[in-house]
Length: 322
Image (cartoon, rainbow, N blue to C red; front, side):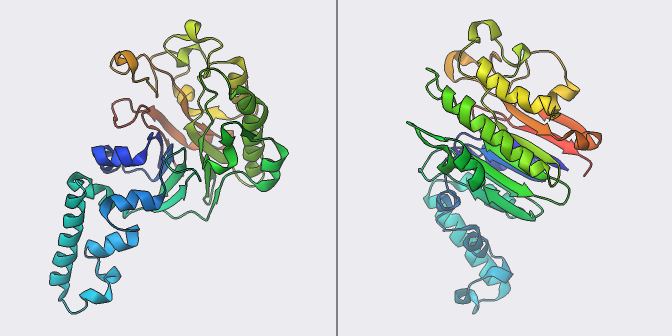
């Protein structure tokens, strides 16, 4: 089983570029966790001129989903007709190259944890095998224990956590709040978000092992960013942010990439758009997969994919013998 995680920095843009369909076609993840989707499911499917994937399947000629309006056609005529309608709508929207996106996603069950604020934040899980159960955000008891609201907004409404339960584990995709360049959100991050998320993962752990991945918006150590000395104390590399990650490590969670590659720099998952940073590989490793140590015997690999374009982040993955 392969599980991928990717901060897409706006899924509609990645779809329009054709990068998302290319990624799905090439890697075929069993489970895919997304962060910073910046859209609802409905907004994404509006790219195709339809309201949801069911209607898109109808338009592509799936006989079992065909609407009554097409029953008078033969199966072949109906399929050709609906496919032509789909192509026409996609072409009218200037998205002819994006048809593969919908075709590939037909294999997946989609779980969208979108923010209330349009075009902001958001997480999602796409899964080839439907999850047993899916939840969004933090449990109410944990959310009320901590003050998760600041002048920027209420993090509990920003679609930052989506959790899928499977037979042998929970999978959590998370988009951790950025502490901001002036550190104006560091207090919320250190005093509220990080402990709240830790409590949530420990609560899940009482039932079965947890895998969590996502954009954690922190470089753990000096090997995890290109310029550690000049970034000490800056957002993404403060003692407070690193302490939040250290708490999971102290609890026994495994940083899967560092399990296979304990030391060494140059392994980054995010690059600024400035100064040709990605081409020069001046980046940060801020996207992670952590697993319960009970799952370690099943862990086969952990990888970073810097050659996958479309976002300022690249995907990361793990492979398990589950």
